[in-house]
Image (cartoon, rainbow, N blue to C red):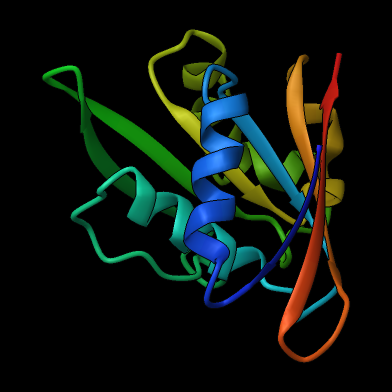
Length: 146
């Protein structure tokens, strides 16, 4: 799936992505610094009506958000692996526990910089590559990795 969007249409892009891939529990966001990974995750959380403050977990490494779906509280773990050195450091930071919850279908994981600890990614998952087209436009390619 390929999406082109701007800040003005990012909400529609997030809605389309969720409608197509929301059944998957792990979303791996790839893109250069400033491509808009956190901004798109924020748009996804807006679409899901997350009431928590959505922000980059660069220093915290993990942010936890909640949304209500079909009367149930659901958890999203927003993981930022940018500062991680390797998979062992990710495990020590509790990332594996978040991934396990997603695998068990009790949470979703939105992961920025997934290449830093790719061995932790369960299959299948959604790989999202965000590319800067211009100052205002982005292109995202979503692929199922299985």
